[in-house]
Amino acid sequence: MEKVRDRWSSRKVFLLASIGSAVGLGNVWRFSYVCYQNGGGAFLIPYFVALFTAGIPLMILEYAIGQMMNGAAPESFAKIRKKYEWIGWWALLIGFVVMTYYTVIMSWCFSYLIYSLKLSWGSSAQDFFFNNFLGLSSGHGDLGGIRWPIFLGLIFVWVSIFFCVIKGTKSVGKVVLITVPLPIICLVLLVIRGVTLPGAMEGLKFYLNPDFKVLLKPDVWLAAYSQIFFSLSLGFGVLIAYASYLPKKSDVVNNAFITGLADAGISFFAGFAVFSTLGYLACTTGVGVDKVVAAGPGLAFVTYPTIISLLPFGAAFFGVLFFIMLLTLGIDSAFSLVEAVVAGGMEKWGISRWKVNFIVCATAFFLGIIFTTRAGLYWLDVVDHFITTFGLVAVGLAECLIIGYVLGAERIRRYVNEHSDFSIGKWWNIIIKFITPSILAVLILKNLWNEIKIPYEKYPGWVLFAGGWGIVVLVVIGAYLLMKVKTKKINFG
Image (cartoon, rainbow, N blue to C red):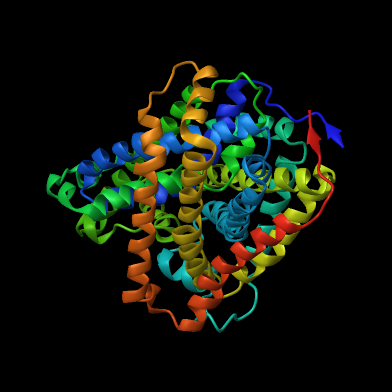
């Protein structure tokens, strides 16, 4: 069966979609905290070294594979060698697992967008989030029933994602024209508000104050490479799918540099919004900035609502603005993961986009229901840790080895140089064949050693197996089985 492949309407739309995929919730709540933990302003040195020696080179690799092979991740790897098709499915299944809980966090954002109108969290944002909103149970084994506001928000999120990708590049192209600029505008307004608050400068000093001694610590450099890898949506198969919708003679290198630098710039800029307001919170409550710093969901759903409640005016407005920003940041990343899986499914099964889209969205929704229970946060924590720490990094390592030593790094380099605004030198071959795989291998071994020494969060063994190692192994097995399925493929002209 032959079919004309979807194509982006313009280079601008492709770049917006790629930037939207890369820039997500982690740009707001992960980068700033990692930067603070690893030397403040000094962390920017290993961060940008990692960007140019791993992030952008890997992005060039994924763009090149998608455009050259004209297929989603499974089809692209199958064209290299049939037996490597499962690597593509491995990447997509990791993204699929992430979808099941990432959309739940977006549901939280949607609920908090509504709560912001009346500042419903009251005087204790922490008690409201953990007890009133999540209704946390005693642990992983005590599911405690579904939290209906989260469940209903999850339905809204999945319906939105379904319609965002229902027409492929056509619908995605229209959505990103709104959802990429909007959070940046919101972020600019939040930065302006933040830096004009009392105590803001103390917060920014805390964020950017360089401690150059930490540059001698290997863990700081590994943290930089880890942050870059996770931040750019590498290893999910998203960039491969997006690049497969490019015309054959489209630029590769410059697009990768634009996307990578945009993601890094937005992460850095978001730190000004976060730490200026943390400085205000510290000033208002009379404690040190280090006492109010939080990471992950704690920053978005506890610390920031507390700050919003203390604002001298316009609290509800800035609350709504903050959660609109999070929602629009999250939606692009979420539907890019869905689009990558849908593209792979269409090529493998030869059925319509609508059907594959519905199957993917419905299945991920039902599997994500466990994260809407009272034990949802516990399960989200363990699944996210294992699937990203081990599964995602391992895919990146496999990509480097297959492209570097099977397809040939030099062959890819010559290809992208023929289709780019400017050329890359043989340094790229060295990075893909030696530097990046070595760093990713060290990351895996280091994290594995940490797990052996002290099990993650000291969770019970059955929890680490069911939500951690078991999920990682199931993804690998599932990828291999999908490769073996005999189905009717679509050949794109």
